[in-house]
Length: 298
Image (cartoon, rainbow, N blue to C red; front, side, top):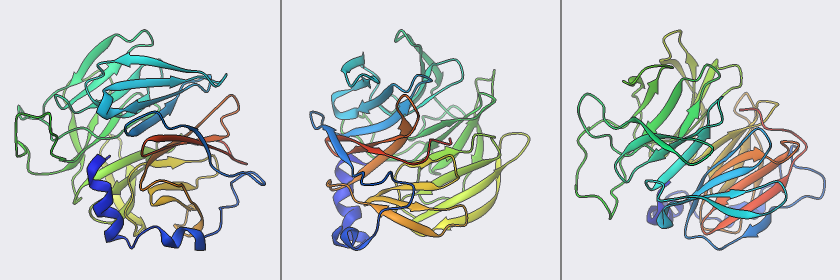
């Protein structure tokens, strides 16, 4: 997530006029189109759903985590969320949050109790945890790019490198999972825990990695050359690249379609709903939904 940075990125990738020239991917339900749920927020990010299909997402400028339940009702799940950005649900139902107010990785219980998981690397302040994925074994991967925030008391990073870190189950100290990025942002992995995808937003690339036994990532493989923010996976292994709308690619990296979203920037997306076949989309001030033929696969 970049907040005020998205306008510059759009110029770099040629604007949004090309969206209308693309066709919807075959994974979208027949006659379905993105529907606006609400536009009452400042900047939406970090969508994730629980086992029941309820959606949680962040409104970072307002420092809140919202809940949108399967009955279509909104409620504020947590005030003062540490400026949470990317979210993911762990196997126990806790929300793992990238909170860059103090550059921490948090665990938030279903009742809203906050626990700090990580607040430094090697004694140095993290750049600003941005997006997160929890592996089936409970291990946590998170990206750590540097985006200067108005609410920080610093003007430069403590850690020069912008990397992906891994926090193994039961540990308190993360390790470097991968480091070959310009600015890593979105991250997602497969349900079997064997593959992890990372969006290098400033590098204009999306990579696939193999997961090693120690949790580190190797075997970098280029999936797409596209400026991408958040990522989502469906049950057939298709990858959803958020940015200028949502571009969908298959397992081989071939583009199968494009989902236009009427916002300047599409930050992130995830699957949810009672049947796990609704694609929830956080874009600008809005929250959108799209009925799909496929279910979520992350």
